[in-house]
Length: 351
Image 1 (cartoon, helix red, strand yellow):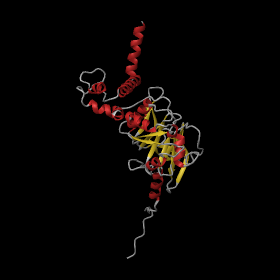
Image 2 (tube, one colour):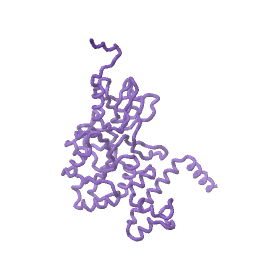
Image 3 (cartoon, helix red, strand yellow):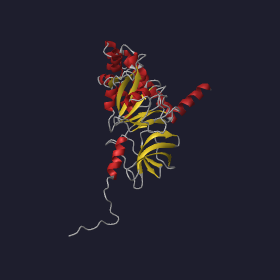
Image 4 (cartoon, helix red, strand yellow):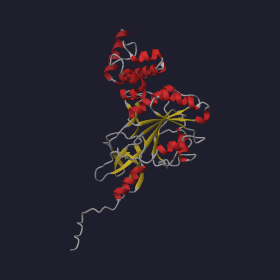
């Protein structure tokens, strides 16, 4: 008996789904990413945002990779950022797909939220040590990283510029207990291969650091080049400082997002981000008499007792209080009712 012919509308598996999946894997897709789109749409990942448009790497219906500057549809659900997975139709961004996490900070207007990057596995806290360690900034970066839901990793850079790297590593461990630390030098190559091994296929990382922390040099060292040769954009910045959020595909198989250096670390975080960063205080606080202990003169405070006994550095509690105070203050500024009440009080006091 002869095989019946396929109906005219039957589809034949020609390997296109596999080709699409391979391309998406090179863009950092992991099993945690939801990249399903509607029929007639293509899927891609945002590499650079240009105001009202974005550069997107995407797969066409034949499973072939394309790179396009795409305008936003008028009814777009979210403003995309680097790292977002998006649905395209006729090279318009018609939907930002579900974000599994995001690195965020308060907008400079102190009312809105600024999303720096999305869909992350690893947040590299890039901190130079050639002039000592900026503990306060490192703590704030750690809070941001934990708040994103991605795994933080401290990358100490410019190790060739100090003769006391070991002491600075110990200081880093005290500042962010439980977070892995990797000491690197873009000049000598120290730590570069270890970092490269962490950035394998399926891993999306973002570099978070201050201006001048050595992020671009670190990227160059990872790729063995004097400039960002694997930039998705048509024109890489090479040795220049980063001025926009960009996605790079690395020769190690992973994806790296480079964002501009942060000069002032304003925080926006849930309590979990603080609890993770200050895990030592969180652990001791379990022995406080009151669950809502503020660790500031409260009766039966185990944290203050640990400071008095020398088991907890006073600087740790001071940092914890400063960050809690900053977050409380910013939360009040973002709350319209609280801000209105504050203005009313000022007005009454001036009468």
